[in-house]
Every structure is written in C-alpha cells, then in structure tokens.
Amino acid sequence: MNKDTYKPAGKLRSGWTTGACATAAAKAAVQALLQGNFESSVTIRLPGGQEPTFTLSRQSLTGDQAIAGVIKDAGDDPDVTHGAEIVVTVKPANAGAGVTFRAGEGVGTATLPGLPIAVGEPAINPAPRKMIDEAVRAVAAEQGQPADFEISISIPGGEALAEKTMNGRLGILGGLSVLGTTGIVKPYSCSAWIHSIHSGIDVARATGILHIAASTGKTSETAIKKLYKMENSALIDMGDFAGGVLKYLRHHPLEKLTLAGGFGKLTKLAQGHMDLHSARSELDFTGLVDNLAKLGADEDTLQAGREATTAMGILEIATERGLALADFIAARARHNVLDALNGETEVEVCIFDRSGQLVGRSGEDS
Image 1: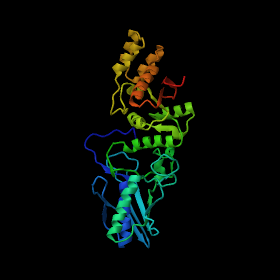
Image 2: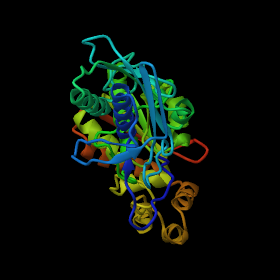
Image 3: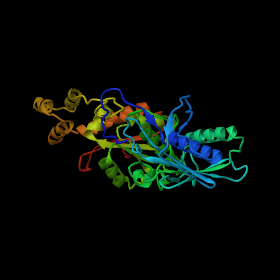
Image 4: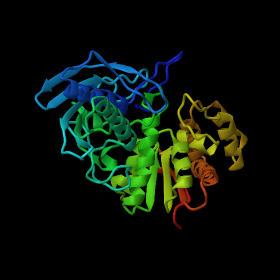
C-alpha cells in the first residue's frame, strides 16, 4: 500500500489476498497431480465461508510434479502485489510427512524472531498455511489418498516488489510474505500496513530492542535514526497510522517509544487525531493559532498566524518571534500518546522540519 495514495470516491471492489491465491493454485495443482489433469477453474473455501472461483494463469503437469499459477487481483486496493502471479509447485512428500512448505522464487524467509513464523521458515503466515493445508487435505481425502505433499510457493519478481515493503527491516529476506487472515482484501483497509507495524514491534521486542522510533515519513525516520544511531529493526514506518502503533503498544508495551514526524502531522496528533492522513483528518488552523496566544504572542503575531495558509507558515511566524510552538505541540502530542498507552512505555515526541532539523521535542531524557 502506498500511504500517499488517495482513496477514490464511489463503491470500491474487494480482492483476494496472496494467501487465497496460493490456496487456489495449491488446490489446483494437487487435483492435477492426483487426477492426472487440470480442471478449467478452481473454487476454494475461505475462513468466513465464502467460496470464490479462480482461473489459472499457468498449469503444468510433468511426472510427479504439478505447477499452477493465479494472478492476484487485489480489487481496488493499491496493493503492491496486485497483478503479481502466485505460482505453486506441488510434489509428493514422504509418507507421513503431511503438508510441508517451501519458499520459491520471490518469497522471503524469516531471519529474525518475533514473527508468527519461526526463523528459517518461508514467509508464509499461519492463516494461509492453514487454508492451504485444509484445501489440500480435502482434495486428497476425495481421492482416497494421504495428504503428503511438498508445497513450494513462488512470486516471480517478488524480491524486487519486497523492496517496496517493510520486509527487509522485519528480517524477511529474499522476497515477499504470503499474507491474509480472511482471504479477502478490503480496499483501503490498510491491513498490510498495520500488519507490518505490529510485526515491527514484535521483532523489536524479540530481538531485545527496548527503544523504538515510529516515524511519519522518510525525512523524520532518517533524522531520528541519526539522532539515536538506531538499527533498522528499531524503526517503525508508521506513516499516518499513529493509532495503529499506539493501540498495539498498549497491549504489547516496550520500554520507550519515540514518535517522529513533521510539524503538520504531529499537530494533528496534538489535536487528538490518531489517523494523520489528509483525507481522513483535518488540521485545526484556528486551534493552532490559539496556541500562539497561550505562548504569549501579541496581537500582531496572532493576526499574522491567522493569515498564514499552512501549518509550517504558522511555525515560521512563531520561530521568528521566539515562541517555542513546536515544543508546545510536541508536548501536547506526547500527552495524547501517553493517554492512549497503559503507562508502561516511556514516550518522547520529536518534530523535524523538511530538511530533517529537530525543531520541537518533548519527553527526551534529562
């Protein structure tokens, strides 16, 4: 998901997760392996009871190996994997082995603890594994055969696509993850982004990191990384989803959280918004100017603030007049963050300008 993508108006079309596509391809390949031929389409059952039908993008049956592919349709969601081909290769496994999984081309491997899969395992999450396992066992039972199969999942071009995700800092190397709990992609639900935030917090905890930094963008992330000399696994690409970070930390606390961002985004947080996207929350300019009065601004300064057209314009006016507006906003944002947490996490808020210079701070070590 591109956090700068705006949700279009009107009714939007849902799509299918990578896990659902992999399940369809796996079922088709197992059917072909046991029946000796591919069917024209394949229908699977999702955890919620829905039964979508998929057509195959490729099919191959040679000896004891069957290969099937499905093109992922994420609907109207700006999913990075929309249009990618999910390819499953199925081979018989040793008797009693059950269903085992392998990472093929473009599917990553877990290298850090804290993920829902063990280190060294292919990045195929538990829910897709369960969907695939159930589909394969059902096909095998229909044919009176044991469900002993090696399932290899590939996503051609997946390693390049993974560079657009947070997989690298989560320790998922070599490609994408196969995700999806329901099998359905709800457009603009941001589920993949929130999942990465939660996984980042889990990986930090599992690797002994006590202090994480959640940033709204690349400029603030680069700046906070330099300030604290942080490793990548301590950095959370929060984007606009402050609420997603705080809700998870409330139940999975760490020792310290630094929230880093630009003045406009963190002003929204100071004003009580937990979703910082411009399409989903609006900055209160009147309230921001009122803060100048609380800092002792004279009427000329207040009038200049009222005439400003951007939050940064108001900040520049405050800075010229020696008013610590950014520190004030950082303190208000920190207050809201502390309210959203359970008291077990120390909180700091850092505000950076567009050049990455620290302009406001609250809660730093004294």
